[in-house]
Image (cartoon, rainbow, N blue to C red; front, side):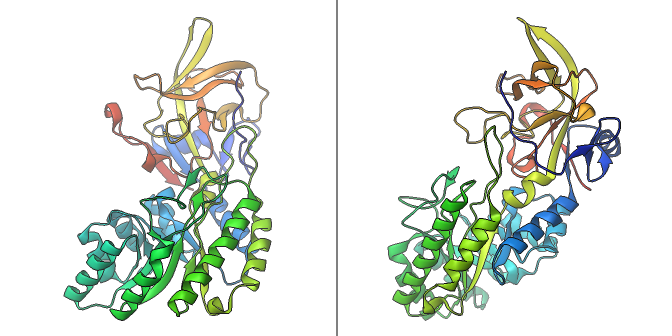
Length: 409
């Protein structure tokens, strides 16, 4: 037997034991969608999550949604009404962000490999480019000159530190992301001399961290770095994007980030900041922390079989929709995501089974020897923490299976 991760708070069952998502029965949602597999996103949980963040953080700190976590169009349109800006990482995401109703001036565009046509689209729309290199700055200034426009440009800084305990380190040492801190002042002076509308700094040290003290320490280092750079440049940055870093509990033993503690520490950091940043605005850029817990992946059992004494529940879903839950998206040791039998939600475990997908590969395993209530053909399996890096981060066309359905409720 291998344990699974903690099911997020806020989920419950009706009197028949059926999982409720957004107040609706999981089975009814599958019927409404027309088939499974299905991702369901709970809009009330999205609203509550944003409210939790705003209550925890210092007044005036902006909240940006990193839409790489989930670019589902109805969800984007919903989030556009809740947050202060979107952060995008491709021309496709830029187009989707603009279509969502988010104002171009509240969109920032990061990423180390922006093509000229993407730079042009962002400059023409009026979005802010987070420059990742001196070469990208040269191209952006040239394109803006040809367009006869003043570009909105920020500099993504590769800091001299990383976020301790983060699942994905984005700063410190040699990185494809951002401009090394020592080279930033000269680049910013060049942008100012060229007449660009300099928007400030984007400093992202890491993501998927659960240690609130480590997040707070990284934010303090980030603010100090921004002040040091600003003093060297001699100009106050309009905005300092502090990046994200706040993770969610996926695996057994994981504990949620203490958002209130992060907020208190950030308030103290900003209160004591260098005078050069006195008129700067600050933002946090969050993706998975905002949307992961609001999503559930529903997949139906199509076969139940026994092999060498081990029971397998074979579903119509799999890693082509939930690559991360299968353990094939950056994890070294495979561990089980939160999982449940939707039609027996909250019931006592009765057997140890492995939940597998429909693909012809041994990698397609959604639950490895987990203890669940008894389930058979036709029952729904629910995979939680599915609101981030699910559908769009998985190989939907692998073996010709096609994408899952998605729904915002």
